[in-house]
Image (cartoon, rainbow, N blue to C red; front, side, top):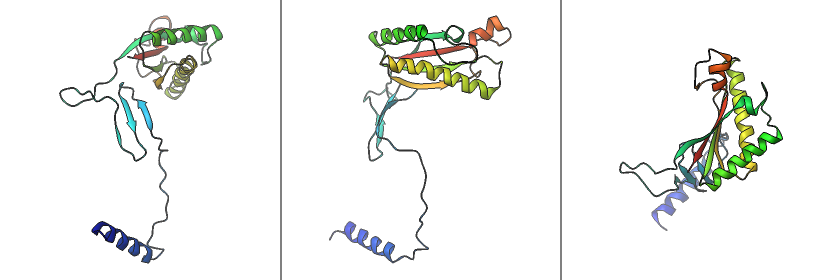
Length: 185
């Protein structure tokens, strides 16, 4: 028997001999572990295996050791006034078709995946705006998925990332109500 096997047998006997009160029977709750491949919002592809080993998909590195990731650039900004009714997040059939064509054309031009971010103006509460912007971003992401696009990240920012001051309804507020689509190439 090797030293490792002897140690394992000894530890097993010690655990078996320990009284039941000394053994911890609690279950630790955590996130569900699913092996696979994903893309972070920074454009980097990651992998994780069954044993928990994790790494970057690309073997390419910069001189200082950082992984080389996909480029992310804004490829579409959709004013939500054109896409959604006030306080709503459902998209009508004509706009769904326009969005689907946008995603298909972007993929034909070399887009690997999409990041979809929703934004609102400052008229409602922060909680309400976060929920509305997230729902609107998810509605656009559903159209993307239906068009066969890979969606790497969907987030709602509410009123937290304005493009312009929220001082006038026609000016800044209208500019801040938007869904931004980033293309990863």
